[in-house]
Length: 191
Image 1 (cartoon, rainbow, N blue to C red):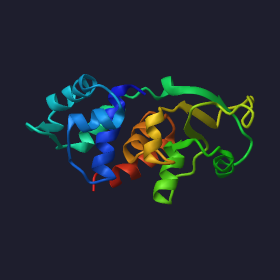
Image 2 (image 1 turned 180 degrees about the vertical axis):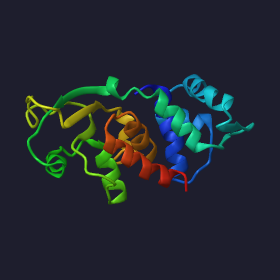
Image 3 (image 1 turned 90 degrees about the vertical axis):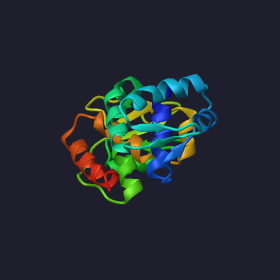
Image 4 (image 1 turned 90 degrees about the horizontal axis):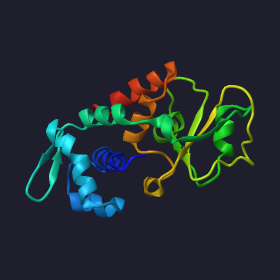
């Protein structure tokens, strides 16, 4: 994930999960352990699109949904995939096999965050630092276990991706059921 995406994730996490619309560049820089210039560069297109309103001491999020869509169009999920394989068991069985250190993404994140699923799904996406080949060896067939590169900073959000990152990752998955999850998630973020 690019550093600008970490900035968008943190802003939207503050907005959706913490109900905090006002942030500072200094806060983002310290929280994400990135330079102020990186934060400033990430915010530039948001200012130009009137997604945030800069003030002398902070900025205010004006249109989080527009920001979410902007990030979704910039996200390159495929570039973060570093291992995928097939496991002959149900998705709930695969989820139970996952090591403690992974962060659930996409469909599983939605299920664990909201306690429901708008459609059946057949893949488990996780952010991890390694591929766990010994637990999930390479097999032929359509992959149903997908490992994405985990940035260490993502651990601060817990065992599932943030609402915003779940949305953005689902946006970049090309299945009919990803669209069903997105519709439901869109209802949640537009409330």
